[in-house]
Length: 106
Image (cartoon, helix red, strand yellow):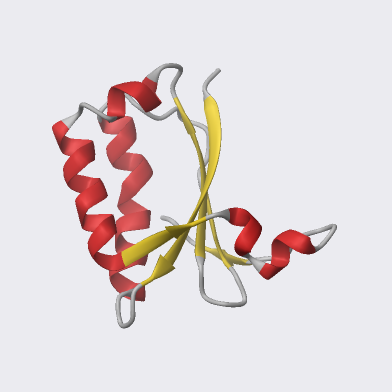
């Protein structure tokens, strides 16, 4: 078992397609590096256009990622196209059953 995470990315102006491309490649790259499990990843879009990703890190992989040059480079690419936002800032997070538009990852 690993650590399930939900991350929310607010695309920078004009960068939504680049963010979606990164998100589609994100978990496959983490798996290639031995950092993510084979559990299916999910991607969703909020009403405000924020992209949410749900995936599972392998046990201990979050710490390992912080010293992996491939992961650090990927995080730099993310920083160029989005800002990370807390889930609680999404209007949907106030709903009992938060609903999001499904996105295809593969």
